[in-house]
Image 1 (cartoon, helix red, strand yellow):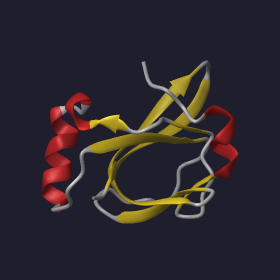
Image 2 (tube, one colour):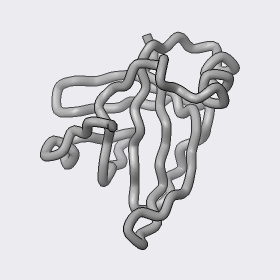
Image 3 (tube, one colour):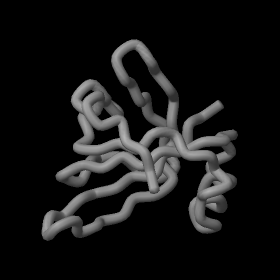
Amino acid sequence: MEEHFEGETPYITLDSHTPMANSKPIHNMFMSKHVRKKLKETGYTSNQHMNVMFERSKPLRVGDSYTWKLREMEFNVVVLGKTELFVKGMRVYAYCVGIIE
């Protein structure tokens, strides 16, 4: 089960967009083969990834890098995947991002 930033989420931005939920970093050993392949294709190095969820689709493209911020903490991330989910009857857009080393 993923841990989330909970009360800190309103202070998170991904390319200036504030998510509705954001998992804490997860080691890449839990990453699916499809997403690992996408990471390899980008040429970036990453040992951890996060899942970032929004209520609406954002103009974030798979393979592109963006800045993820939580207050003073800042990471460069690469979008590795995007999917549309239904959670309790609500449409959610989830982005898997790798933390670039």
